[in-house]
Length: 312
Image 1 (cartoon, rainbow, N blue to C red):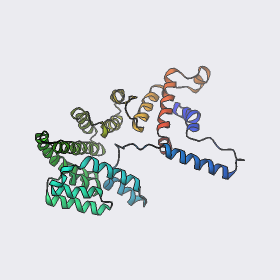
Image 2: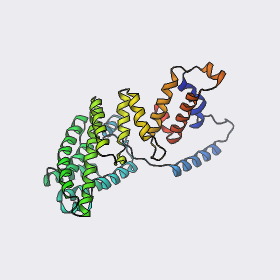
Image 3: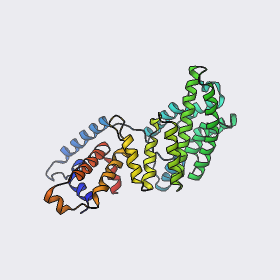
Image 4: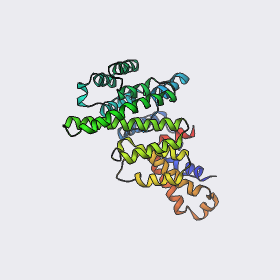
C-alpha cells in the first residue's frame, strides 16, 4: 500500500464523511442530518476568486457542446460580472463613448448582447482594450483565437496605460483611471501566459508570470503566483514550486486550494518513495510523514471537493 493509499484509508475517508452509516439507522434521520450538514456547510462556505478559471467561449462552451450541460451557474456569472465591473470600469468611462458601451456590456447578462456591445465599442474606438478582452473570453472558440484577441488587447492596453501614467497626478479621477488601466494590462498579460501554457509554451508562460509579479508586486488580488505554480508543476520544477510556496504560503495571506494542495503534494513527494506500511505500523509515522498527513488534512479541510474530483 502506498503512502497516499494509507492516508486515504486512515485519514481522508473519515474527514470526507466516507465512513458508512449503520444500516439500522432510519432513512428519515439520515436525511435530516444530511440536510442539516448541507445548511451548515453553506453557511460556512467562503467564495475565493479562481485564478485558474477557464475561457468561457473556448473551454466552457466546448464542455456544453460535448456534454449538453452548462458548467457555469447564474451565481458564477454574477461573481465574474462583479469582478469585471470592479476591475475594468471607472468613473471617467462616461467621458469616452467606447468605455460607456463597455460599462453596459459588463452588466449585460446575455452573452450575445455582451459580444455585440464589444463590437460596438470597437467601432467607436479600435483601441478599446476591454472590448478585445470580452471577445477573447466569450466569443473565441479556440485558444489560438483567444491568444490572438488578447494580443490585440495587450497592444491597446499598453498604449492606454502609458497615457494614463503621464496624467495620473492631474486629479483623483486620473488616478482611478490609471488603476483601471493597470488592472486591464495585468489581466491581459496573465491570460496571455495562460494561453501560452495551454498551447504548450510552458517556459514562456513562466517568464510572463514572473515578469508580471516583479513589475506589479502589489496586485496580489490576481493570485498570479497560483498560475505560476500550475506551470512550474507541469515542468516538474519542484524546487521552484517550493520557493514560490515559501513566499506565499503564509498565515497572514488568504489561503487557496491551489496553495494547500500544492504544499501537501510536495510534502508527500518527500516521503512516498520510501514509505513502508509495515515499518509505519511498527514504529509509527516519522516526523516528515506526520507533516505530510497534516498538510493533506489542511488541504482537505480547506476544500473537501478536490479529492472527490481526483478519484473520478
